[in-house]
View 1 (cartoon, rainbow, N blue to C red):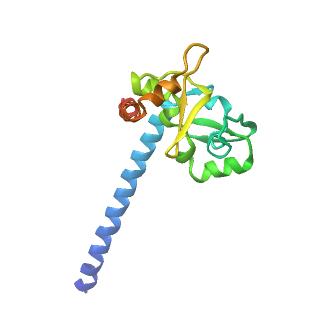
View 2 (view 1 turned 90 degrees about the vertical axis):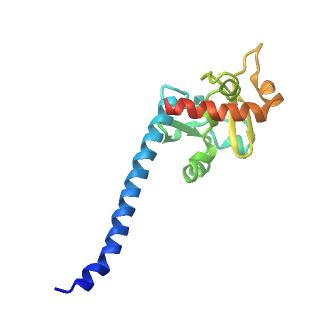
View 3 (view 1 turned 30 degrees about the horizontal axis):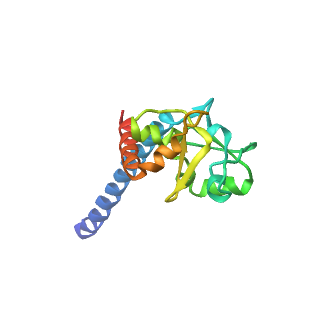
Length: 166
């Protein structure tokens, strides 16, 4: 029996098995994270951002309603788009366009860690992230966020991670 050939294959076999185990572990962890994000997403009957186009916040720099006929699923939510081009952009990098904190009010997430509804027309795009805010006639949380943004963003990031881990 040629033991030289068996020994030569053993390191490769170990590398292959190790790689497959890592891939399975990574895939399972990613699936679990996706499920947690879907569980905590701000959706109304499965619809994200109340039907507004997440890409338009970046490209048109305004809140733009999406069309029912142009949509896609991401993290358990349906996203609508104003154009096919915007949908295609989203599909290439959904994590770049999906709103921070699952679409909940960024100020509330930073201030108290609570999931508070938003007004999709009250937003800020900063450092490549979309932040949405609660806004009614008497209470607009965007200016409050802007007064202490670095601190509130740090707290919001921490609070969001706590929510996802529960």
